[in-house]
Image (cartoon, rainbow, N blue to C red; front, side):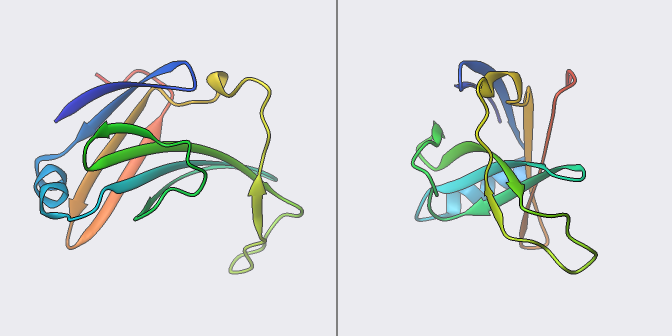
Amino acid sequence: MKAIITLAGKTLRVHLSRAAARALARRDAPLVVEMELYFSCLIRKTVRFRDTTRHGAAVRVTDRLLVEFRPVTSARCGLSGDEPALRDFPIADPRAYVPRWLTIDYRRGEWRGQFGYHRLD
């Protein structure tokens, strides 16, 4: 399944694998997919899957799928196994940081996702 949504004024292409679409159809409640962009000593991209939205800023893709973008930072750099607490990172123009694409898959009972900024054909 493919869908196009607008997130923070930017077009985001959402791609679900067949396995993800089947798993999504079996859910009773919507799945919230959070694209987290972490700014600190490094930049890290993480996709998190939740049952509820954290900030109420999620965009509906389907009746069972919501997507949100969350830039975060920490007060210090974490060492391996020492993850510092994250806090929201205010961005003046989030449109510049919203990804172009998001892929969602479901394998071995787990949700998996990736997002990116280069064109995905």
